[in-house]
Length: 496
Ligand code: ZN
Image 1 (cartoon, protein in one colour):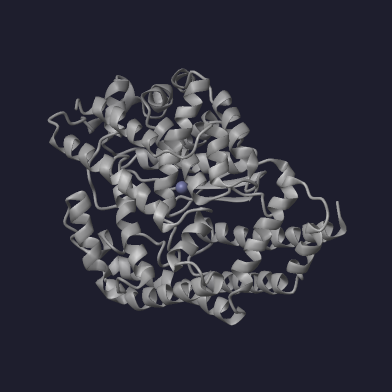
Image 2: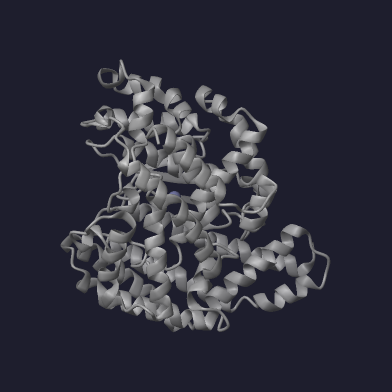
């Protein structure tokens, strides 16, 4: 390895260590820390963030990269330099004081958002969102003055993505999903969901979680589970990945599918190759690819007839009086009921992407300046009526429901829909090479996980989402697979 590359690896290791520390603090904050203890953690996090920033600014990274590029490099090293350069620009093009100011704004905004949501009072949150949008637009100018502000962030979450691609993708989805939803709504055949009615013993639910994790192939010596208000996954490195869940007495599916969804994220992270350890390539490549794995496990696999047959004995063991005589077919239809609702995180597979389209349309206009923050609730409600046919009774169930904008994340939402569509294409490709349904029904995840490791998981951030899709499927991204999947699944369930 050339001398400059050796120095660059030291920079990467330092960044890895600082990121590791911040991740542990973040995980502790969401899972175990006592409620009134933020002050110390906030200080520590701010200091760690300043350390990372100062370290990068003073690292001579641009010179080191130029020096390294003068000699022969491996493909991995080239990818490291590409990602490091991006990270350097992302952080160093924004003046340190503005960066710190923005971090403070985000902390305050998230705090006010949760109060505003509890009070269903958008006006309380609006001044913070105005500042966030203004800051994001300004940062976009600094990051890439030649690009539209929204495109800068779309590309950050999903390398290669832009408004033009999103418009085409979402138009195609809308044209496929809206007629399907209309047919479902008009169908007289509605699944019977009484099998899912609570209450469900929480202790039994807790015993089920690690069983499900083991079933889908997670190694519990490297992946741990905890509880938090909103489920999430965080990786310290590929040998220590954490998922969280939330238990509700009235809802058994919520925990079950949180574990399977976060389990999909954790499978991805824990199967990334050791060759990227402590480098900037050690995590998943994009939010879209990440969501493709979690949503594939949650929906394409987790809500399949075969998976439900497979886990029925586990459900019977946990809740004998509820599932003893359960018909797997009734359970399958119940977990796949389609019913337009107001809340994105509770949406079924058919309506989910409509929630994303709504957010996409709004944030695109917020970022271009076409839509003022003060008009946001009105536009939110109008689009909810247009896309889902529903009236929004209050902001808590409308424009205030998600934390993303309070967290400064504009441009994140499209990755959920992209991931959902990638997932169907990956399933199609896997199905050509193995008896997928049979394996799922037997609970034999080894061949499935081996295929995903070979084609996707192992690569960390070395290759772009486009490259991974082509590598795994032998063709470019095609949302048609997702629409075919939805149409055939729901036509059967609803007798369309
Ligand atoms: Zn997820």
